Length: 615
View (tube, one colour):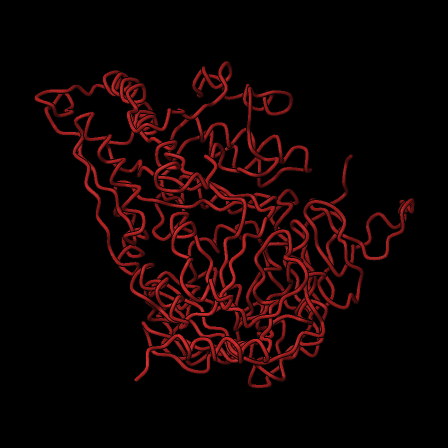
């Protein structure tokens, strides 16, 4: 059905069967919420999100763990390593309901007004919005934040907001963003995610440099104390301006959120076992299967559970940096994908916990499958001459082994592809016509992935390749990946149920050359470039799905990554001092909705003391 605007905008209170008359067709559309998929569930003035307990007690502390280090409180620039959870300090124009796919409700913004022609969006701010120093949060702060991030922020801001033509402050509480065209359907929603910074506070500070003092914000927390590289504590703001809004009621219940930093995941796990950390999300299947049988679990002091989610799982894998000559040929990349033995790794390393990832948009309706059909096929036909012929005649498949560890078929097929690409084996070494060895390095940011990378390296060495694994600390890893200084690495390409502007940062030519971008593979392909723009400018949901599946299929057939695996649950463990709502939201973990139960906290602390050795 043809729409009059470029996004699905929710009109609060619109009754079923009511049709706007032509006289009202050009009126701006005002709402309390934005949606990219359908109608919003919650009405204007809703009391709280459905997964939040409005009567949750405030108080207590939660201690969380992080691996690595930090030397800054500014996550908005490339320089420095920002502390985790700095988003707690800031408020955004809108807030998502984690129970709904791609729906956000006005938070700083009380009302969202979209022009009927889709060429602008205006946010009317709540007059009670305040920064922590009591200064009103106004449209001037929004404008300053937007302009500063566009000029000095991380590269993705310029990519996200590239279709904004002009920003105008119309009053202290109203700001309007005008667009270059009406086709970028998710742009209003992206602008709603803007973390608003205080213009007056930054007036005497250099935004381009790492921030070494606690910043001023307007969110539910502020930084109370810190020691760079070791710990940072966020304290709840008791007079938080939004505490009674439906978008905040029942959330931010801990008086303090303390984050302790550890040098590697093993130390972080041991800190959790010792009670130095209260809550832990486990991402390593082996640890989940074997490491949670310590005494506190057996005594009921620590709980563990898996929560099912409905999130698209995106793509994790070994990424080949196509800026390197050795990975330019798609046949070489395909060969490297054939050699990876997922079935062996899943059985021997992961206790059968994972599902192989076969799409960049896995666990969603956006994933390609089978052969291209319908609108997707019609779209891909335009590029037939530039695409692999097999894309139209064969379903994309990843190799499946018997799990024995003897991947002879994958090695045979891989070697055949390498020979087609001009490589040959001489004296048990894989060399090109100039006699140069096939050599590269896998860069890792911690030792936990070594047990996956090293067996893979052994298989690659059987083909005559010289492959090394280099593990560096997270800070060095960030510097190197920002500068694209690696041959192969492990990356996660996160996706949502409504892909759009972020795809430019992942796949386009401009971002392949821009340090700090998320185009880790260095992709620069004209077909991919056009498909990304078609996704950004998709006129409706049906076209978005077809265009996303087409992009997915093209990326898969180009073999930029060696796909890994995914889990469709959150694996969490916690010291049993918390209360939580009856259920978890569909699309996130939402620790922010938990609270400390004082009686349980006393039992847990007593249990910890009883487990300590006598002095």
